[in-house]
Amino acid sequence: MKLKDYNIPDQASGALVNFINKAREQSMLDSLSDQDKAFVLASEQIEKVRNFVGEPSAILGSEATKHGEIAEQVEVGIRNAKAALQGVDPSRLPGDIESVARTGPADYLINNIEVQSKFINGANNNLNHVIDHMNKYGNFGRDGSYYHIPKDTHELINKIISGENVDGVSQRTINAIKEKVHEIEQTTGQSFNTVVQPGVSTYAEVQQGTVNDTLNRHESDLSSENEKIKSEIETDHGPTIIELGKASAIGAAVGGSIVFATGVYSKYKEGKNIFAGDFDTEDWKEIGLDTAKGATIGAISSASIYALTNYAAMSAPFASSVVSAVKGVGSLTKQYNMGNISKEEFLNLGMLVCAESAIVGLFTAAGQTLIPIPIVGAVIGSIAGKMLVEFTGSSQALKEEMNEKVARYTAKLDVASKQALTRISAEFDRLGELTKAAFDFENNLRGAVESSILLAEHYGVEDSKIIRNTNDLDNFMLS
Image 1 (cartoon, rainbow, N blue to C red):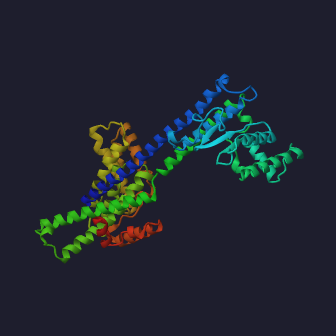
Image 2 (cartoon, rainbow, N blue to C red):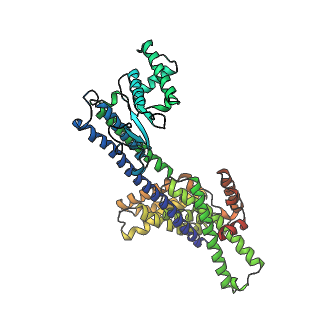
Image 3 (cartoon, rainbow, N blue to C red):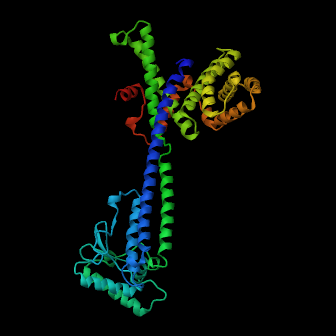
């Protein structure tokens, strides 16, 4: 492939990598938008509870027992809020208090299962109320329905059941609690923890004087969890090795296709028509080797563009032009070192090879800065010269000569243009080792192929998806 043709597959790969990046970014934005909606729905569940507790006169019971209905509303509201935050559809939220009779055997439904809430002060008293309810409703606690009690009371009862020491509870009360737990299990034929489960609140958290603080705490927890989920969404939609492999595969197809088409057209100009069967064995061999080479170059170029756009925060056009420049300078350096071109030719051709990246860099990094027309050439020359110095592996003397040229270009710039140049230079400086990677495809093509295969195997790519030779490439392109 000629120097002037390097940018053709690179720009195509850049466009495709840009499409991959944009699709991933759009998916992330859609997910973040959905999460914002989920948070709004979760907040609405808390607000429903606030509205309920904000009208004490509408709550059943005396001042000493109103906390019972408050506990029910908090239980359903918090469960629904947590589910909503996880993306559960409004019609599928687990808690339902609206369709249950206010004075019936169940206080609410959790996942369509009847639940009776018993928030009574004291563990022994709480169990008494559970047993009384079970005696009144013969099937409750036996048919899948169950009870909710304060979570701190439930924790205390379980400590007593397991024989742990509990401070402030008399032995008489401990014995009474054990007897009632045994009675519940004998009556239902199920374990205590199946029939009697902890609610989301403690007894103290649902009292009229504390419930607003309880709701504030739950709101704060929901907000923190929401930020955590959004952070995970951003992380999950970040660049990945798998996607880099996808970009590399696309680059292989693009690079191989372009070289194949170019080779066929070149043969056509020589008087050989592929469709008329004019190609002989040597023609097919030449095009096949060039195609494989183009595919390898395309794969590595696309992977480089993917890395530059995602890890060095470069725009796709800028990244693809940089990759083209690196390869072009690498080829020129090889020719210069072999004595095929002079120092002056190397410098002039090198500036031309880097000019495209310099122009793209100018427009992507300069922003709104207006560069006066008379000195645009000097700006481009300064950028191209810096690139040539960065990308070349030539002698220090050659680099110093190039730096002197860059200094002469820079001296012509005004303050605004120098500021723009500084920003563009920072783009290159952030690339680090990425811009210094070896692109010596002419001498190291086999090594590049072998390295890419080893890399794919290392990251667990399925063997059937690894392009190892021309036949694999043909199958990939025709599949």
